[in-house]
Length: 226
Image 1 (cartoon, rainbow, N blue to C red):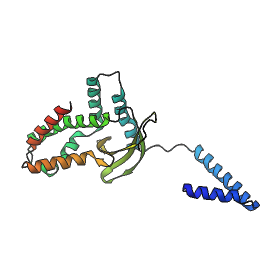
Image 2 (image 1 turned 180 degrees about the vertical axis):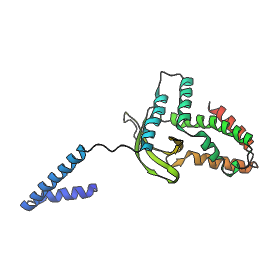
Image 3 (image 1 turned 120 degrees about the vertical axis):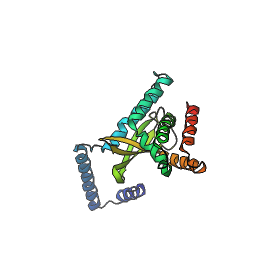
Image 4 (image 1 turned 90 degrees about the horizontal axis):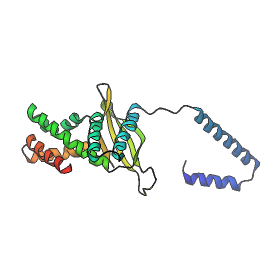
């Protein structure tokens, strides 16, 4: 019910002195209280597994980045271990190659996957470091095909100091071998895995599909971020 409608309805009730209207107001108020108390007495609905997974695990990463007791190297190491347990890096690496994955030899593909892992860890740590000091709040989720779920979240300043709109960060979660993993995340609607795929396939298209060249480029980019 909109705020405008509520104000108009309240103004009408205040200006009307007919006994029938007053009785209607009392009945409506009693009904509203009954609804509130009934809802309060029900147990809270549990978040679905994907939402709970994001709530529990992503907040762990933010907590690591906020831990001032750890040195920079310690935070990097622990955040690396955290991300490797949270995400399916190999699946993301294969996805970012697009059609060029089919033409790569097992040796070249393995070297790329190893290089991409180090690159992705550096990129993701850089992304999440921007949210240091903030907390994550799950806003809901919706299912996709293939057993995937999009979990919608926002990043909030726990001290309420931020004057801007909360940052929207969504996660694509899927089940894998009996466990949940993140295979992509978006910042303000831009999906990182899709962005990387577009960049990488464009680079490969300009370099005869040479995955080894892409691997070398990723190694250089990783070194620059460390």
